[in-house]
Amino acid sequence: MTRSVYVTGIDRGDGRQVVELGVMELLTRQVDRVGVFRPLVHDGPDRLFELLRARYRLTQDPASVYGMDYHEASTLQAEQGADELVSSLVDRFHLVARDYDVVLVLGTDFADTQFPDELALNARLANGFGASVIPVVGGRGQTAESVRAETRNAYRAYDGLGCDVLAMVVNRVAPADRADISER
Image (cartoon, rainbow, N blue to C red; front, side):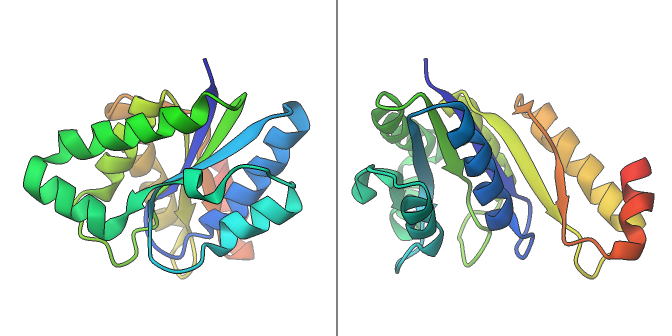
């Protein structure tokens, strides 16, 4: 069975792409065949996938990276329900996963989407993919206490939805708050 790691933010501006790049670096040092899957994608170029493709010399067909675009996903969910959306994306993931030792899943980005509970969607997808989850919490412009609370809440949310939480990453924290946040 292919192993997979699902990196997801919990809000916009969390610096998740830097974490995804770092996870890819770690994965490519451990296994030979690393695939990439992005369940939902916006129209336009995917600069992160292009960077991963160039940096790690991925031979994966770019068309196989994407589950579906946000518009298609929103329509599918509205017409047939969330279960059908998740099932379709899980099927597409497994088509990719069969060719790789590990798959890095690039979670949704919380930007201009029509999903009222995007965190729960990411959790359902991670569970359907059999992926461990790395939620990324953005700390820019927040107090140390609010970052700690957001991190605890995100952990409890993913854990409560049955996810295997591999790690929690807090990113973009003010230097003065780092020690206070990491101590708790």
